[in-house]
Length: 264
Image (cartoon, rainbow, N blue to C red):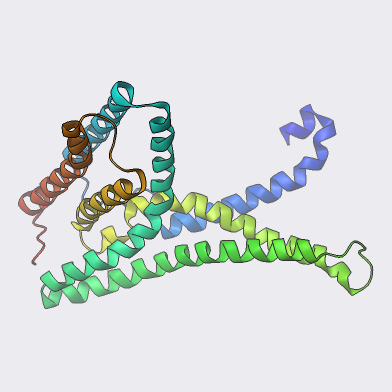
């Protein structure tokens, strides 16, 4: 509204902006209802969070130093591509890894604990189903819009004149899906698709599993990092090993301070 008052010639942007705002608000409410942004840990341990942040900053600084000392311009571009690839691969990799880790926890847990975990697993599956459905529907709706646009006749008369309205009708859910995935992806990854509610140790176990999977994927996609052989080995193994060490330290604190056990 301020845009219309200050710049009267922009009145035509009011309706699209209002529509986008309503879609964004609706998608954000639904995304945060399914994946609460601050529910990634059922036990809030500030010491663990502080160590995790410190390890992440140290890893980032070491990666920059490695590129500055031994990297070439193509290595910088490759590191940027690997970072984008990790962002794209994280949700599907998490969806594939979480059931395996949950199955291992079910195998370790007692009969009483399994019955309590089943209801939480069903809730996590429902929220993950929403995300998978949105990811699946996005290319389908986009492909339908592209096909309709290609097959649209030059004249809008006759029965073919309904095509533009079909494109608009499909564009509206497409915009909502884009907003939903934008708001849901971050919390979904942080919460492990709400698997933290299944077991308090599950986020640490998932983190320790994913970091080694990312190491293998990065090694296959980008090869060894720059530097001497010793530096290369340390760079490949140091990150996953440090994350695993912090994850098991978190599990140790959960067991000793909060009574959370893996074989309960």
